[in-house]
Length: 182
Image (cartoon, rainbow, N blue to C red; front, side, top):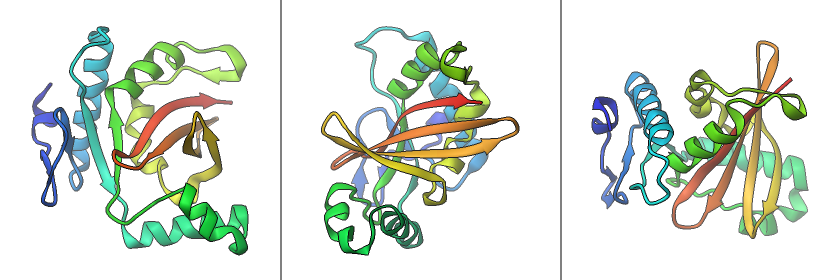
C-alpha cells in the first residue's frame, strides 16, 4: 500500500485492529489518499487470496447514535424501537469500515454500468463515502442474507449515490457496495 495508507493507525483506542486494517479518523487528506490507494490495490490485485486491506474512517459518536435512533423511530415507530435496536445495533464506538472487497465488487460491477439506469462509479464517488454514511442520508433499512443493512442515498449534481452498509457484530459497520443512479 502507499504512504497515506501507512499513516493510518493499527489501533483503535486500546484495541489492535485486524491485520491489514488501519484507522484514519481525523485527517481528510490522508483518508482520501488512503481510499485512492485502497481502490488501486483492489483494482490491481485480482487474486481472491490477496491479503485483506481496509480503512476505518469513523467511529460512531453519541450524537451519531442519537440521530440513528431517530431514524429508526421515523421508519419503524417508537413502539418497535427496542426490537429494531436488537436487529440494527449501532453502538457508540462501533467502527465504519471500507475494505478491498467493496472496492473489488464496485469496480467490477458498477464502474462500467449503464444498465438499470445506473451510472459508472468513479474514484470521486468512493471519496464521498465518509460524507454519505451519515444517519441523515438513510433511505431504508434492509435485512438480507441474515445480515442487517442500511441503505444511504445522497444527491450530487444530476445523480444519486447509493451506499449500502452491513452491520456486523464484531467487525463493525462495513460498506458493502456503492452505485449511482439517475
